[in-house]
Image 1: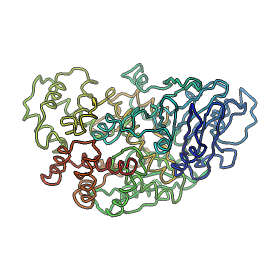
Image 2: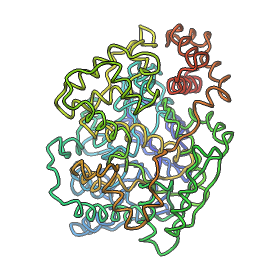
Image 3: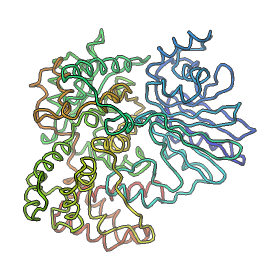
Image 4: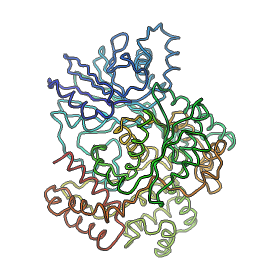
Length: 627
C-alpha cells in the first residue's frame, strides 16, 4: 500500500516538482520513496512506499522489469501473486530479484501484455506503467475501485496521482471548480467518478486502464471489467443454484478471499463492529489463523451510537485479541478540523470521523487491517432496498394515488427525514411519485426511487450562482447495482482509504474479491432478501460460525451526532464559514439561498443537517486549498 504520482510534460519540469508532489502524500508511504525519469520523453514516475510484502530493498519502487522494457509505480496489492508467480515460472525461467507482488505483476505484463495481466490479477491496485519500447504511459485501476487514481490533463501535460494533493503541486494546474461536481457533492455528500472537484481533472473509472501516446499526447480508455455485463440485468446469467448450494458456495468464496488477503509480511488485524459483515470476515480469519487475530472497534460515550458491546461479544465468541476505545463527543469533534487534510476533495460522509479514529487505534498494533465493507452493497444490506419493495408492494395495481395518502405512507417509513416531506411536497417530486407508480420496468422504478431518496432543496432552488449553474442529472445504474458503482466506489471506499492511509494503515476488503463480486452479481434477489431479512444468504454463512443472537439487532451504522454538533459545538464555526462576507467574496453560492438555509436550520429548526454539514465541509475544504 503506497502513494503514487507522476507526469508527462511537453517541456522540462523542475526536478523538485516530483519531490514536492510525493511529500504531499507521505502519509501513504512513510517507509521510503523513489523516482524514475526518462529525460528524452519527460516521463517522471514517483512512489511513496508503505512496505507490506518484501520489506527489503528488492521491493523498492518505481521498479523496472527484468527485460528493462517496463517501469511501474504501484499502489495496492496483488493478492494472488503467488499463484501468478507459479504460472509465470511454468512459462519462463525467471531469476527473481525479490518476493514482492510488484515484481510478479511486471513479469506478468511482460508475458501476456497489460490487458490479459489485468484480467488475471485479483487485488486492489492503482498503478502507472511506462513502456519504453512503445513510448506509452498506462494508468490502471482495480475492478471495484478500492484504490484511488486521479489524472489531470491540459495541452502540455498529463499528471496522475493517488490523491489530488500532488496534482495541485504541478506548475500548470489550475484550481478551477467543476460546478457540476460541486452540485453533485452538495446533493450526495460525495462526487461520482469520473468527475472531480476540479475542471480537467478526473478519477479513472474502476475496471479501466488508460494508454497515452507519449509523442502526441493522445490517450484512450479501455474497460477490462464491467459489472453491468456480469449482472443478471446485463449479459450475465442468473445462477442456477439452490439456496443451500448458494450458501455453501459463498462460504467457500469468502474464506478463500480472506485467506488470500491474510498474506502479508507485517502485523495484521481487522476492524470489528459486531455486525454481519465484519463478524464474518473476522470469524474466517480466526478459523485460518494459528494465533489470535487482532481486532479493533470504537465505542461512543453516547449510548445512542455505541455498538462496542456487540463487537466485544462477537470477539469473545470468536476468540480474538480485541481492543476497543470509548470516545466522547469531544474526541470526535476534534477530528473535524482534520477532514480537509485527509480528504483533499470535498467529502462529507460523517462516518469518516469514527473511521479515522478506529484506523488510528488499529495502527498502534498492526499495519494491515481487513474490513467488512462491501457486504451491504453486494448482498442488499441497506434499508432502502427494503423500503423500495415496501413502496413497490404498496403501489402495486394503483394507477393514481392521493397526495395526502402517499405522504402519510412515506412518513410511516421515513418519518420527516426527507426534506421534501418536512415542509411541502414539491410538484416535481409528486410527478416523480406518479411516474414511479405508472412505470412498469423494475429497473426504471428503482431509478426514480433513488432519485427521490437523494433529492434535496438544491435540485429545486439551485443555490450555486447562475454562472456556474450545472445541468445536474442524478446518474443511476440498474436496480441494486447503483450502490456498487457509485456509493461503494465514491463514498465507502474513499472514506476508508483516506482515513486509513492518513494513519499509514493499509485496509483490505475480502468481500470485493473478484469471485465474490461476480457471484453476488448473478445471485437471485430473493436469496439476498428472504423472510424479511436483508443479506439472508450472507447471514446464513455467518451463523455457521457465530450464533445469530449475537448479531440480530437493528442496523445502526457508524453514526455520530452531527445535527447536535451543528446546532451547538460547531455552530460558531459553521456561521463563520457561511458568513455573508465569505459567500459574497467566493462568488460560488447565491447569498439569499444560503441565508434561507441557515434560517431554516437554526431558527425554524428544520432538519437541514445534511446540507448544512455538506456546505460546512466544502467551506473547510475551500479554506484549506483555495485561499
